[in-house]
Image (cartoon, rainbow, N blue to C red; front, side, top):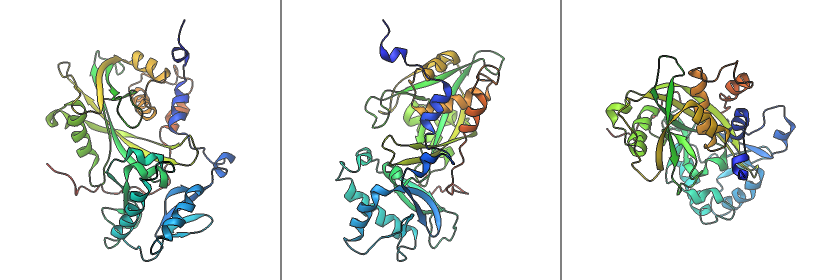
Length: 334
């Protein structure tokens, strides 16, 4: 008899819904979620759940108040007028919160890696690399700020047709703090503040898949996917944009785990990848990157996928917050 897990099958649109789970206007559920706008210099850059307000008030009462709070928004007090002061205040607060994992469970996955929170304002006196502040990666969901990453599809051609392909698929390490043991794209990683997309792809290719730079440099950008995930608690949102790359690998190149992030790699046909997606075996955003690849290579078509139009639309959610016009590269080493 098949196990309960073996019997679970999802539509491809179900998988997209798992990734892009924040309701769209005018869905009344959106108004019931109790979020306040996170605003910097008059520019909305994220959303904070109302349950967090008491913790912000408590932090305000310790020293000099940091946050200005209204019924609809959270912003910084006027004395926090530049990148350094805002980033420093947030860092001080998060370092306190990470000692209270009962209330801030997400900080148990502390990365010690900063993500930029970008703004439309370009004054170098108040911003850095286009960012109004930077925030610890694991805390981004608390503030609902826009995060960025890169995902790379590694594939091998098996014939002349666009769909004659096999994909290299990674299995995430069982010790990963998020989605341990699920399937992943060949290379993927968040973009630390100060790293460009191409630099991140090349760096992650070696760290995760032992693909040397002279091969990884052949990867090329093919677009983006974007979505906003609502946490199961309904108290955090994570808007994300993944910049997607393709890399055709020679048949004699095999990715190999290098660090502790990946258990193994397997070279799968498109049917095998689709079957695993429908079985819920992929990290949801990685499954969406695969669907993006399959649409571009005519594996999925309007004729063979009933939700084709909705899937294609939903892979590109419009994120309402500013993004960088030019990627900062001040942390890159060559």
